[in-house]
Length: 231
Ligand SMILES: *Cc1c(COP(=O)(O)O)cnc(C)c1O
Image (cartoon, rainbow, N blue to C red):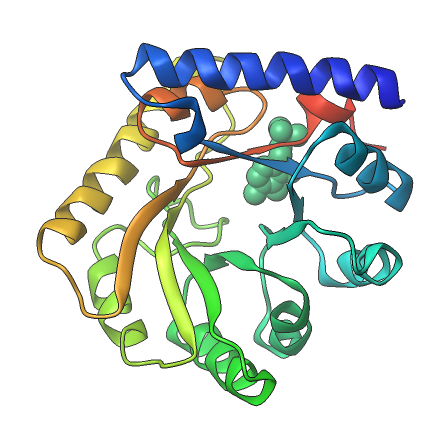
C-alpha cells in the first residue's frame, strides 16, 4: 500500500504543480487535502508516511476513532462533510479547518464550542452554486449576508469559501462553478467585511482538480486518485 500510495502522491503533486503553473500560479499556493473517509486508520498512517500533511474526513464518528488513534501525529485535520450543530463540539476538538459552514445556526454553535475550548475555529463557508436542493451550502446570493453575521462571532474565523459542484463525467463541465466561486470570492474581497478573510478556495476533487486549480483553488480535496475506490 505504501509504495502505491507514494507513487500516486508523486503523480498528484506533479499534476497540481503543472495546473498551478499553467494558470500563472505557484505550486505552493495549492494545498492537497487527502480525503480518507471510509478508509481505515492504517491508510491515514500510510498517507502521513508518504508526506501528506492534511487529512480530510466527512463523518464525525469515523473521524473520532482515527483521530484518537493518530494523536498526537503532526498533521492537520480538515472536516469536509455535512456538519450537524449537535456534533459541533467534537468538530471543534478535532479539526483545524471546517470547510462546510452554511448557516448562522451552525456557526453560532461552533463559536460557542470554540469559546468553551479556548480556541478560534477556522472555517470556510460552503456555497451551493447550482442551487441543488439536495446539497448543503448557502446560495450565492445569500453568502455576503451570512458572512456579515459570521463576522460578529469572536471564536470563529472565516478563511474563505468552499464548493462541491454536481458530479460531471467531464471536468470542463465543473469549470464554470469553479470560476463562479472565484468571482464571488473576489467580489467579497473587493468590499471587505471586518474579521472575514477571503484567501482560501476549497474546490476540486479527483475528477476535476486541475480545472479547479486553473480557476483559483487553494485547497483541493482528493480521495480516489490517492487511495483508489472507496469500500
Ligand atoms: C469524498 C469527497 C471528496 C473526495 O472525492 P474523490 O472523488 O474521491 O477525490 C472531496 N470533497 C468532498 C466534500 C467529499 O465528500
